[in-house]
Image 1: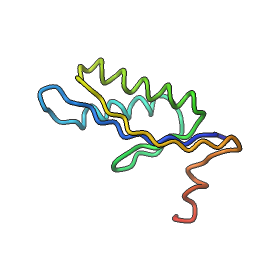
Image 2: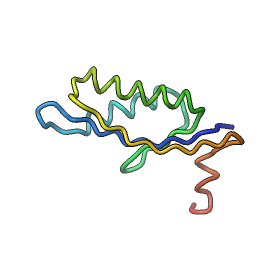
Image 3: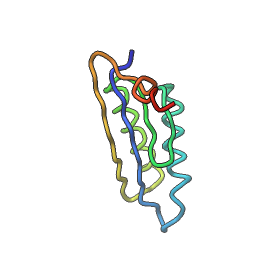
Image 4: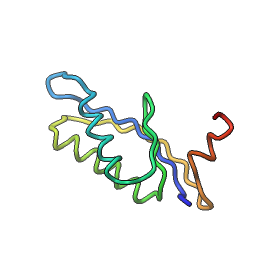
Length: 96
């Protein structure tokens, strides 16, 4: 079982003041390619896995924004780390 839930909202500064959505889509693609369990929501995406792996994904997301020539990136992150296991499904089952 995974030990960590990590939610991220990435807010890139877009060159020329353009639309931020294509950049956010690129960041979400990085999560999708990683293979970790995740859920995309309106304002953030939550991932489930091991803390070092999830932090590497966050780094890859920020690196992609730099490669896309974003002058700055804000990554708002929330982490739930439980050595005995953390699960999106378990955490939210009473609401479904």
